[in-house]
Length: 215
Image 1: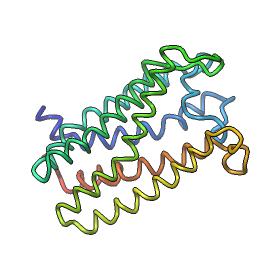
Image 2 (image 1 turned 45 degrees about the horizontal axis):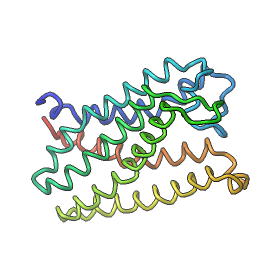
Image 3 (image 1 turned 135 degrees about the vertical axis):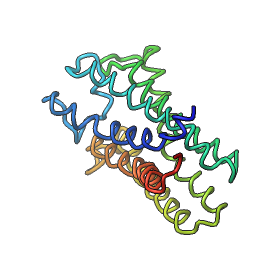
Image 4 (image 1 turned 90 degrees about the vertical axis):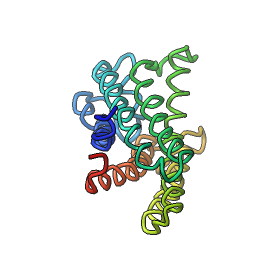
């Protein structure tokens, strides 16, 4: 456990980098994929040539996030055990729900009805994405409690941007509406949304590494 607390923010950084690069690296080996119009989960579809690599990579990325949890909780537990627990939970939700579950429970986009694997995959992704969105909220509340105005303002701004972009991505998933310009590019909307979800975690992890937290 001491090792996790010491190197947790490095694991968090690796988790973000690993998860962010997944579709772009695997896209080099999947010529038919269209990054602009296809969601990332198609890499794990039954007929994907990079399915096994995607599933393994997703689990690995998720493990990095999970390994970061003790360090995150330790950093803020003296400020507020409740907020520290909620912040840590958001990372766990994403690591387990959107990464590990993606690797263990793949989907078949050609199948008309959802099977058990698809249900678990989609519910896990939903919970994971919620964790993604709520991460800057709890950081904002923690830094407000610590009277760290610069950081609290930063994460509040990132929170609003994340929600706005997530709203655009949500519209891109609604039949009828998603035929409009930009919204028809659901892959693009998803990837832009993810960039602004990764950004608060990336900034946070790099700041803690720079400050030598956990050592």
